[in-house]
Length: 566
Image (cartoon, rainbow, N blue to C red; front, side, top):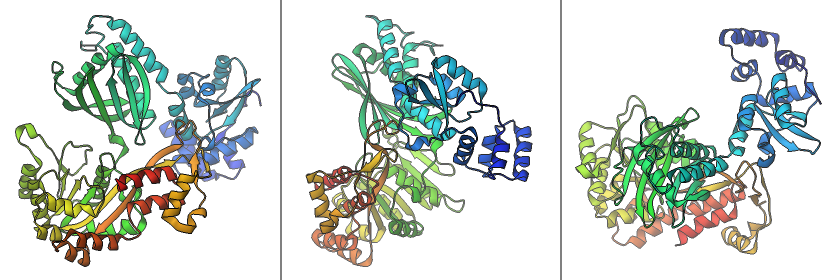
């Protein structure tokens, strides 16, 4: 197909019986009032889906409809069209056929866009129709900032030279155009595009590494001259209100950064190393909202039991696991469920990660003796119904928390233990009286995070001998039945084969037999009773279940298993 003809979307949808006259009239009236695009009005009103509009346009124009969710776009082809034009015209180059480019457009009837793209690409164009929301997601993934970051890092290195230029460091007023400011903005934009949870800036002897943690794994984003490390550290300290003159001691802070109209809360930690200050930033997207309990990956039976327990008027709920296992997300999901006008909720955290409306959140500050134990004692005098303690760090916090749970409060907290069974024993080791643990503790939830197979490039695969043997030990003779999946790697998952993460869980409910065992002096008696209660519902079992469902790989399940075997 050549240059498209101008056609009316409403008429097409009427012809293909996807829309009624009344709905079209209502949408046209809304368009006159708001000035919004007609297609967006149809979708927002629930008259048609984005895919139905795309398919209807494709049939009318006799061009293909491409579902970008299942289409692997090569970045070197897509970037033939500059990013500014791709976003402006809602278009992307999906194929280089030699004689022509196949261009996917959300609105293929936009004649001006067609002419402009044709002029820039300097080659014949064959159109395809794509969904707008998937198109924008694809543009975010394809147009990475890698080259831009490397270029800005080089520019900053050249500008600094052998001397310290405070304008280049972005330390002077009106320094928004300073290379270091532009470099950090590009880093943040790229990190948000690829769903990074952390940014690591690490000075080495001859270079500085910028790495992103994506789905729990670190990936090198850029390498630059080592002399820019100090400029980056100074600028980040300035942004977070830290002492720029102190380079010998670690510092912690936070700041906000705006990335494409999205507010990102950044938590920063600096640490002196042999070659300069290392900075690690945790990115917290405040606009994303809190995940509900039903969205964090809990099995249905476990979800139902947990919901029943957290609605009790008193008791303690502990969530355990290593750093970065999603404990805070789980706790916030539970709090969000309990956050009603009838309940007073107080949280004691270090640091406060997400701001929750209607909840009293307290930030720990140990330098002025504002500790977990002290704030918790004060919180009990504030007439709370629910208390969240960020972490059970010491004997005082543990005892105060357990006592609060005994005196009519629901207490949530975290503990760094390997699994659910060892958690009550850990509380005893920390000096908590045995009777308090048995009476107050309601449930222990242990968790890890598993990477999910990319839906776009996931395919059935044959297991290597070691993985097949591991599954055989877990499933016995049934290990040959499931179809095991693995991702090839594509633009959607940045070549990793994984996209997104989900939680794997085990839950120890303090039932009567378990409580009676907890009151016995021999820990082995308790562990036996706990394992009996959790039989078949442990972390490894949940991981294996996700493998059988094709949601994750055997390698990911083995990683969880190895953590538990340590």
